Image (cartoon, rainbow, N blue to C red):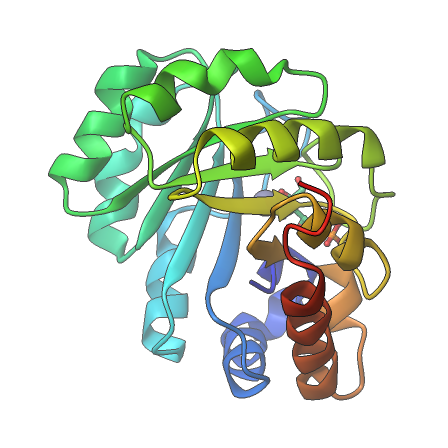
Length: 218
Ligand code: DX5
Ligand code: ZN
């Protein structure tokens, strides 16, 4: 899932099309409100733009303090998966249920320092279809992968073989192997993919390494 946070903001539609042509499975859209994280990025209109640019699904990461106020707009914009943070100020159960009621895939995400136990309730009750494990502190692309989150991934994978586990931050051709070994099956990659002259072989290599190493360390 290429993150368009790393694309050229003057040519975002081209960035989405480039990711799709490279063989990406989904587009990852990073939404930041300047409060939950120090940065400000995209709103629902950027999801609309991406929907118009590509056929692949929109994986929308809400780094916002009050996601419950925004899910309708992001659903209507054409999001397929909507990820809310466990650390945000909302009723998590209600907000995930509202995402599902809008016909979208609900996902929960957790910051590097947040204990994995905080999302057990979401898994036990199957409020989510996907968990997004942050492997950097959210807010900016191009940060270093924090390997200490891998333990949380393995715990989630042992608990729930049915859930999609995504990882976000610092994914490249070396870190993808470790993350896959712990049970990750969806990978967000921003700066690594968009800095390539040709994104296609990079996407194929990431996918192959992920498949070859999936769950080896679980
Ligand atoms: C960070 C974002 C990430 C970011 C990843 O707050 O959630 O999706 O775009 O960028 P890279 O792959 O460059 O670490
Ligand atoms: Zn993200």
